[in-house]
Image (cartoon, rainbow, N blue to C red; front, top):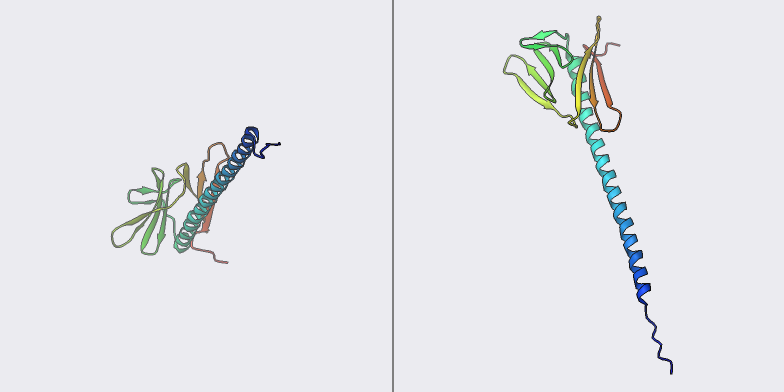
Length: 163
């Protein structure tokens, strides 16, 4: 009489468990990679939105301006400060303490609001060219660890494009 049962041996069970463990490990690695990729894409989209908002506001202000004075009260124009004269009011962009602030001084009280920038390791610099129709540039430099700095320059002609 043959009493042989068909069943799995301990070695076969260990083999199946090892394969399931490997598949779960690969699945987790795939999920983590997808999550990191999604986070990077979200950060890039956020950066583009912030730079787009800054570009739109900056270009509109420079286009409306008729002059870029060297000083306004306690403010001095320079690499960290830009002053624009727009008719009855002044618009000042200031880079201070790691934040970019846009302030408007007119007949009433001064209003100011921070301009959204995405990273802590960011610096902002203003550059003005000389001449009858100067170009004004805001240079945003993002320092990323173990990578080349990313520089975004937004330029506009004082008084707008007169082509």
